[in-house]
Image (cartoon, rainbow, N blue to C red; front, side, top):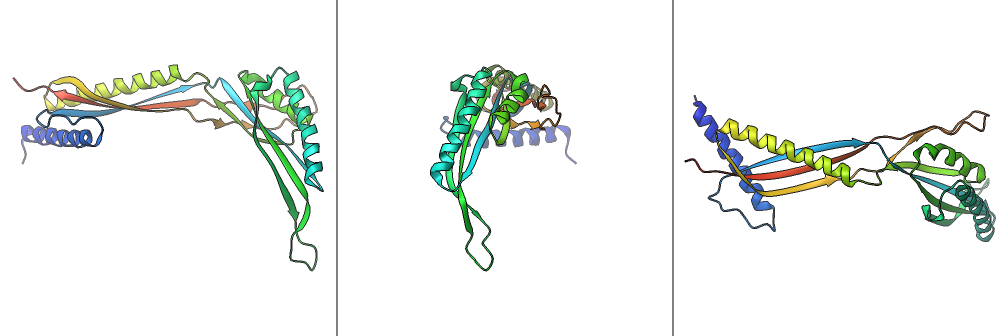
Length: 247
């Protein structure tokens, strides 16, 4: 049977071995003096925040017997969509083309034939609309569709100013790592020294697609309902403390 002192010694040895192994891998930092005992801890912070910007990805698709006609029709319709958006107060710089494509459109083969039948050419012009007034997302969608947009790929939400949220997540991660170090040091009956190494990874929020449903009411004043989702920012920190020698 192992005494409490022996168990504590084995645990400290395991922790120190893990810390030294991790320090050796964190190149190009200079390796710590093998004679210096260290304690390695990790902490994670997570902050949720309401989004403050949105991106609407919408497109105009046209189909015509030839590419030239399909392109001309598409351009006219897209100009109407952009005009509707700018009339609603969206700056031209906040309407950016994400994709433009022209490709043949084939239908099923005719009876007694094996080759697909060319129905014409399809042109797709996809733009992304950026706005910060989230309450207007639904009404802008409706205006774009009324002006001629016939495809909505997605509505994404994000954080325009991430620094404050990322900083808070990092502070939480450091606090939790420090608390873990203090608990371990007390359990091992050792004294913590200075932090000799620190590293962090901050995960920026993703642009999450929104859930929305097209309004079916005949009342034109009813806008498409949009439900923005909270954004989550995570930070992970690794701290390595020196264990001060016993006196």
